[in-house]
Length: 321
Ligand code: FAD
Image (tube, rainbow, N blue to C red):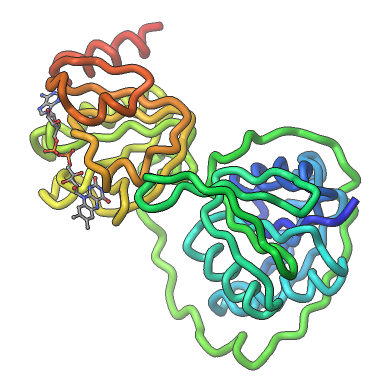
């Protein structure tokens, strides 16, 4: 079977969930080979988890450049990994801002094709076939890279995390950095204040609030339901523009794209620009007092009602169960 490179996204050796999902996809396409980069020796501890999720080999490179500089050193390393395995069946990268930049630069260097924001990738005789949701989710397309090594970024929550024991043999990856690698330096990092909730784009459940929430002072209703479900909080642009919730939580065309197992839209009408960011959610629930609200065309379960009555009851019911 051909090798499939998986770029590992981790924080101090703790592998992030989207990488484990990529390993599930990689196993459909061939033998997963994980590329693990770190600025210190902490990264190495991730190798065990990668093996438990199907990585046949783990190529490890440690260098200060990975922590000090922006994405180019990581592209240098991925390119070196492509050289080590020969002609991989694909290179899979999680669809974060950084992931997409790395993937685009790599595809350019390899002279191959790039597919971004795939929501599914399946094997075919001609090579991996990726499904994307495009034009504000108005169309679903399937596409395939027709020349060179396919470089594909995959949205979080596009595949389940599955344990699959594999060798996970650790091998050193030697990387020589090009001149560009040290061109832009990170001068400061300011950690975002943690809310204790999951990252919006990675969360399995997202509870969102829109203009119907009526004000910042009412968003604790959304947060309470989110906390009862272990969910992330999202918001429509109307709620964000009104200053009720931070822009980093906006879901939609000009916000973040989420694809959770469960999306609960509260007081959100379902404008096309909002749909663009959540339409690929597996199960969609809406609470809206207007039975004609367009969001109801999209939902699996709809509650026609006042969110100020529905949400406290729902939260109460979940927490007392
Ligand atoms: P509204 O459309 O005002 O809907 C509020 C809903 O709440 C209504 O359906 C109402 O029935 C319901 N409601 C009111 N009170 C209650 C209650 N007590 N209980 C239950 N339901 C109640 N929007 C985004 O969300 N994300 C984006 O990224 C985004 N990008 C955009 C980009 C562009 C270029 C443009 C032009 C627009 C964009 N928009 C985006 C804005 C989008 O068009 C809508 O204006 C926005 O999504 C509306 O937000 P909303 O559903 O919260 O508000």
